[in-house]
Image (spheres, rainbow, N blue to C red):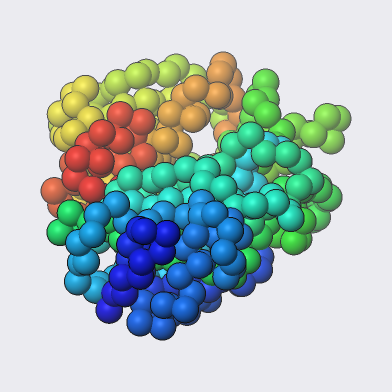
Amino acid sequence: MTDKVKKNGRKILLLGSLICGMAGVIPCTVVHATDMTSRVAATESASLQQTSTESTFPETTTEQSPKSDDNLSVVKIKSIDIVSKKSMKLTWDKNKKMDGYIIYRKVENGDWKKVGTCKGGQKTSYTDKGLTYKKTYAYAVVAYQTKNGTKIYSVPTGEGTTKKLSFYSKYKKGLKYYYDADGNVIKDVEGIIGKQKSYVLKVNTSACVVTVYAKDGKKGYKIPVKSFLCAPGKTNKTGTFYTGVTHRYWILFYNSYSQWTKQIHGNILFHTSPYTKYRNNKSLDVKEYNKMGTRASHGCIRLQCVNMKWIYDNCKGKTKVVIYESKNPGPFGKPELEKLPSWHKWDPTDPASAKWCKKKGCH
């Protein structure tokens, strides 16, 4: 149910409320609009709390009152991950029925400010840049939806979800990990350590995971950088190899084709999930793509586009590749795969796919 409250000559539509806790406290509750009349000042606050100061939060732009919609309720911030000394990434659950999200940020004891907008309910993340190392930030995400020409918003209250932009490193079981201020392992440290001159790629064919390692001086390749989900062969030769030739497009077996490829040894390659047409990245074999994370290839190591392109761009020359088998997926665990419907004929991680996903409202 919605309420329409007049304040300063303007009407504000309220639909639901976010009440989020401190860092790591994800559960939220919904306070419906009928309970929000006395709290209308929260929509015109600079602090996400009940206050009468000037609003930095959204309000409706028309007088029309839409029907209530229970889908416009809580936006749960699932995680805030450190990307670099100057950036953090927020993630939340997908809700395709939303028209978009607005991201608000507060720096320590400062005021709330709008820092970004994500159009489309398919969006599930936002990277906030230009931050200051060792500062603590609070975030809130507001969903919005247009009903009968009127834009309505969920209204956040409380102190948001907080995260300190700080990290440290230490060795554990022979590897150098990076941790955030809460003691959580950072699972992608490329933005922290910067681009390296060389890497080692370790392919665990049992767990279907590729882990990238960087060099820690004379200690060797002891820094796990990031991990990729892969689809290796049903059987793979184990051992140490050094990469060879690369190709932007390549012809595979059985009338299938690949974008970015890199030779491991002989006819065994790193390559993308197969396509049914040459140089056509809207001809993805969806059935094969959905096998990512299982032993599905004829011997090569299949990867999603974003990860295969990373290897293509960053692993120059004769990069060392170790192929092994272990029940332990590796230092960062096994990444998850979002499977695709049969009509989704492109890899959503392909850099060229953003416009297609935006048109379809899928990613």
